[in-house]
Image (cartoon, rainbow over all chains, first blue to last red):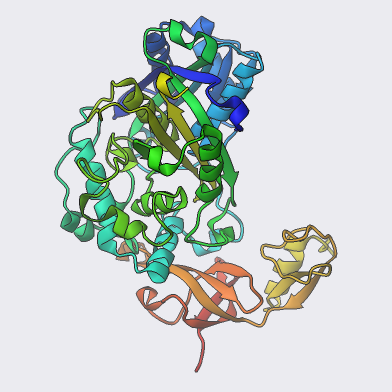
Length: 383
Length: 125
């Protein structure tokens, strides 16, 4: 997104459904319940939706399946599949589409019943031909190798990785919507079952059910809705690779580029961000993205997160809902970074509501550190 | 004689002959992997094949933890060859946890499920 699109669209509704375990429901059921919740939040109806932005883990034409299920015939659909970052990426295409008059009400929506349907982190992807013979466990082996390289180059420690999970849990403990709210210590993380060295099961995101939805309209009518509008100040994407074996530098992600352009479009810098919502599929993600988005220098992410610095009452509020590590992670988490950032700005966050949040960042990760998308959201005061 | 002109087929056929061939761009001179019909660096389409040196270093590594009854733990790593390309692979002949970053390794052609694959063993010093 360029600064021409700064503030041209606004989130006027958010919703979710099926967090944790959605027994007896399908992914599309949870998707639809999320859509209804977000539209209800915005005071709109499904029949008002004329732009759909959706992908799912099931079906080869998931956006069409979703539209059909919802009983809508959108005049614009974006079903671009970048993995979990897709839903942050839709902020860009929804803003462009709204601004061009190609739709008037944009619905971004997702749902999954990964936990009750299979109990595993499943993927529709076929393993790449030149990786499959070595049987990497998708996706954890990829992130484990990124973590190992970061530890090798920068001296990042397992304790520092663990502190990311501990901080996420500390936020989640205040969030009644979070799936895991029990106490978690650094020792618990380090002592948990090792699944892919150097990552234990507590370095990995949850496997839950859940869906999320976001409603956007053009900024010129954004104040006509029940909730305070949350403006899209900037959003930007960068792709790096698809297969982890093609990642050029295992310690640097494309968030460096997506972040730089999102900040430029929004006209803000990392120091202006009051709440940071990152796609934390694994503990290493949080460290990589804090570095690559410019909250600290490359290699200093471990020290940056150490000892509660990103926990409640720390230096920087990161993943204030508990993140994918402790709140919810239904296959793809990206949409929840946007929902939590928007709710912090609106002042109705489900857990710890930070004071006077005007600018928040949502960052989506897709594939195996493959696609990075950064969005910066702002209150009315930031226009 | 089947058509073996596609880049993937050329690589696999050589592998079946116990040989690791690497695609190299005639225009920019850089190697790439995986095999494809163009050079991902300069987008040239004149690609030649060169026998790999087989010499490399572990760039990064992990141990996939697996229950003993399912075959036990195993190594997955990225090896950077002298030619500058990286392979996902595993280092055999040592415990999976003993594979460390920067260790020198040598390629060999092994087998998985009757299919030849590129594997590595610690380099002899």
